[in-house]
Image (tube, rainbow, N blue to C red):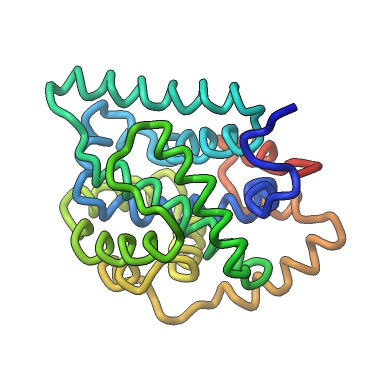
Length: 254
């Protein structure tokens, strides 16, 4: 069977682990809030109503593509494109290409940083592999001016972080929604995870803390995971509403 992502790929290892995906989710939730095009996510009203569900759906689409057979993955990518085109038609204007690139770049960046926070440093070849997979998704979506290799991506990513992020009223409202839907303790955990995986520019704009008390907890969690108790621990600290979705994030075989 022709797979969209080869079975021995580091991308499958990254996206087959629920803990890594949750950290990708944390990073994306921070940067989504700062993006200058976040008004597009407010247009349908779905984001402020259910910000966690909206972000989970984005992550779930990416995960579904990673583990799909080639033709099925293309159909999923085309479905994402069609959904965005529908929103564009409703609003009567197009989502800018840079906004599409930004979301794609987020998935690349947080795939790498989340894995490195939780597991180990990736090799240059593995980082190139992460880039290549998501770049193929972007090419299928017809996104313009994509980088051709990981080094070009790093330069474009740097420019994006400098030019496309702002702490706006949308940012403040979205963080109020995060706090409302998560509760105080879980919201603090979210911000700690964000501080660990987000680039310095994002941390600075959001005024995330330099005091990372989550690090020693993560060290203990790794021990819990070896004892197969991590699912119980996750159920304690994560919202019941998304418990089934979170449990389904783990893939037994990459």
